[in-house]
Image (cartoon, rainbow, N blue to C red):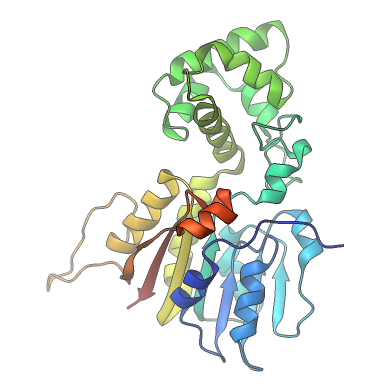
Length: 300
């Protein structure tokens, strides 16, 4: 049975960005419902091949029966390891859509959504130990403040951490609604959804180690792509997009322009085109695409 996921975001733009060669080797590192992967396969010839990564066990329901396709049930931070296992030395294009899928948001038990009741979980890989419950109920106040400030970009991170620690001393904060009720006194008027989304985002990033995974992936992508190979990244919040933008421009995550003896940029990528965002029609048909930002790079 196919699990319902969202429509692939910026599909046409992503395919154009990949500049697909029919006989090429491509990787979709965030398979999800398989929408992007199916569209890539439609443009591949008989000798082309597509690999797809997803650590979420639910994505297994959507795998594609095609001899040109291999599904890898793992986090995309293991890109190089699995390409080596499959005896692939270099690839023609990589697509990464870093968003949480509609399926994950809609399954209340997964704990991703501010609108659905569920235990604090938020694990992309449900076999790992660390979950949102552990973060909220065992992290020290300073640790919580740091993650809300850095990953949620919340100015009142210390107050949020403090109120959580006071509440959990009385009883564990077990569910999404428990957490929302705990921080309710701090919710700014008319900004409830944004405030809660930032809190949930910060916790999810911590649980899944998303920033370190992203950085590891970008470095590996720069190494395994062929010269002329394309990298297409779709980000959904400023932290992700900032890392992608800086790495494409400068080859590092600090945004420091490093040049060789002849004054050439040390980055292995060249930027292709401008930042792409969904059009009005796509935002209307798929509201969860509204924060998407697509960047394209080509290996020099």
